[in-house]
Figure 1: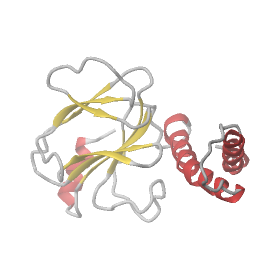
Figure 2: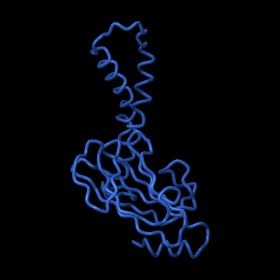
Figure 3: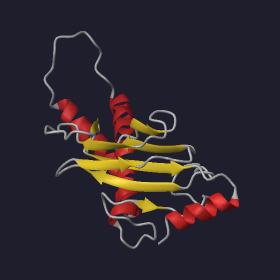
Figure 4: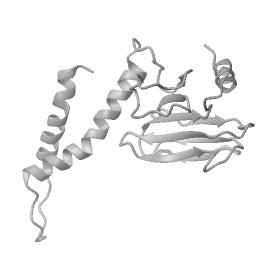
Length: 199
């Protein structure tokens, strides 16, 4: 995203909130109306996560010149542990290489299949909406190592859920999924990981 657009977006969000708040119907409550400063602060707090999420989605799922590009609804697998030079996520974990996918449920639901984790190592599939709220965790701490089949649906989706699928309803129509599996610092674990997820 161009820098000047990025810098203007928070201002536009604040302006829109002020305009729409002035058009709302006045009630008879005795509550003091919010000041412009309070409205602006609320707009920034509300809008900033959306801006950050869109910037991330643009970088990794729209801009095909990015060396970590993967189209929407496809999985990108990072084949090496993170180092201090990796800044695509805040404070990445060095022991658990990442997988990432931006999901768009505009057209339909998506089936997610998690295989059995036979070696019973730590793993997690984190689902985070565009407001940066985690609405679901699949992994060693919640669903253990058995794996499973899941139907990812949008917030207003109404449809048939096939037998054998567990529905996970997203709070927003687009969201990001992070997958991680522990490899530790044992060299054979890293070699096996790279062999499994080779180019």
